[in-house]
Amino acid sequence: MERTQLMEMFKAKASEVAEKDFSALEESSVIADMGVDSLAMLEVVGEMERELEVQIPDDNLVGIETVSQLLDVVEKRVAGA
Amino acid sequence: MATDEFHVKLYRKFQTFFQEAEKKRRWNPVEDIPWSDLNPDAPESLALCAETFLGVESYLPDYIRGGLEAVRASSLAQRWFTANWGYEELKHSMALTEYLLRSGKRTEEQMFDFQAKLMEEEWERPFDTSRKMSIYGMFQEMATFVIYVRHEKLAKDHNDKALAAVYRFNARDEIAHARFYEDVTRVYLEEDREGTVADLAHVAKNFAMPGVGLVPDYDQRIEVMRDEGKMDRDVFLKKVYFPLLKRLDVSRQELVAAAAAERRAAKAAKDIEAAE
Image (cartoon, rainbow over all chains, first blue to last red; front, side):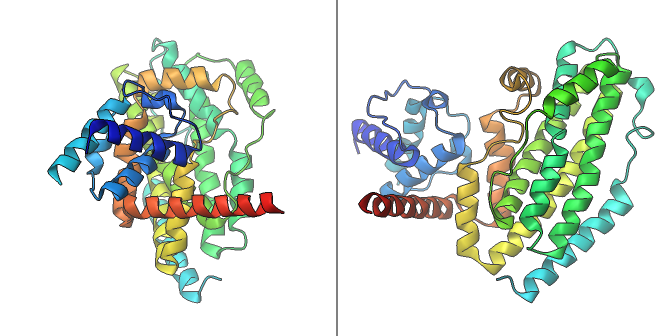
């Protein structure tokens, strides 16, 4: 899956979970600045995992600050799946 | 409607909790803290953190009222636990107050003013049912435990053995409370896994520590506490959220499915309302 597709998926899932418009979001965006609680962000990740049929270990979800870092983790998992 | 087995299981959990508390955790905030070992030269940031903890703990009357309202009709064990919990939490406030006064960081007048200001606001319980409140208690007490442990280390780093002891006693109570709430949540899961997982997802999504928006200058205070005690999102996930889910044998995937179901239900309700 292309990186741009992952980004679009992330924006769509985040908008759905948080009921906010994230269409203008960029990879460099800081997750803490999105106004989405960290536990709600886990829900976004979970939705992506479900759609991509992968499971990301909990430890990999710690220390992530930007959308780009999160996509790196997802991308790596998808590539290894 | 909860079964008899539910009540019996919870009662046994409470008996164990209470016996342990009586045997191993009873302490006196005036007599058991080595007050002569406090460091009056410790930085103001330490006092500010202690005062912030005190501020959050000071809504105890609201927590007890809200907690008892939530569990009153639920079970005997939860009612009794809440009563005992209030007694134990009270000592946290007393110990922190003693610290601030004995260290000379605050005067009695300042303390009474602070308390009066705190009581201008009122804490409302964030969730409507005993199950959701038990889940909330589990996350919140565990998070508080983690924060107290970090501040115990900080107090030691500043050579304040008295404050370190205050945090150590407080933390020991908090982890005991967290474990009881965890036991209760486990019983709820045994009773109704689907409903309890849905509540776990709901509480996780709407979780906020008590005191947010209540304690004066809360945001600035939390900034200082984060700088000093290093509690952030990652610590919460690593030390509180993931370990608790693991201990309860609930996966993130289960929670995601439950959260999605809640979103669908909310949307359907909204659509019906719009159509009417």
